Image (cartoon, rainbow, N blue to C red; front, side, top):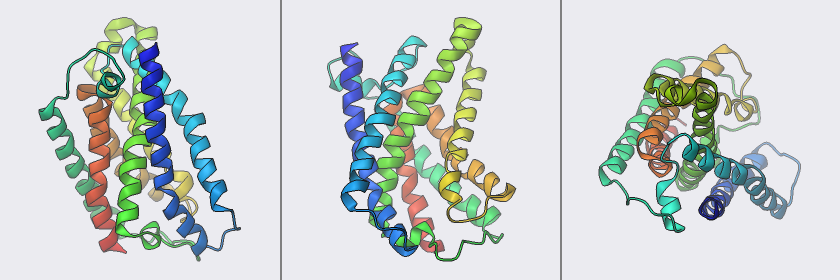
Length: 256
């Protein structure tokens, strides 16, 4: 248990950094739409509080669920805080990085070739997110918040918990079924896509096209990161998600 608590503390600290990394973009976007003034210290304090309230429990429960159903969980993080275990798998991390590049590129191409032919109708006064951030602030937020915070919630917590739930409903055989695990990865990826809609709704009117776009584009990374998580663990999934933001950010900058 002490290892899980130490790992949770480390992951929570990483999530705090992730939450802080997206604040420059949020502050710039608020200024562009003339949102009510909120002191910066309140925004930064809220980011830290969110990490403690939301991501800390998700990290702890995800670590426990992963262990209970035989998943790798976060092997490197747990080793860093004192657990016994194997070192990094270099080949696995190479595959994770390649998956991230491929996934990010696929997202950009799918958006350009399939969805950008339609008019989404940005609400007047609200700038596209790429227009209110520099390349580096956008990339930093994508790598840290996307790579760490979203992977804590979607893969470490959600995928692990769903597979643990399968073990309770259908027994160990169900939890070990590769086909059922793949369905869990898809379900988590779809939830990941839907979770982007609240922010999207501040920029465009939500309709089936917008919902489909969110599910398809975010689902690409969700599925890839989920498969990497099952095979290599949380840290490799973080790498997949984080690196995907390089082609995404490049593509987004070109499209603006």
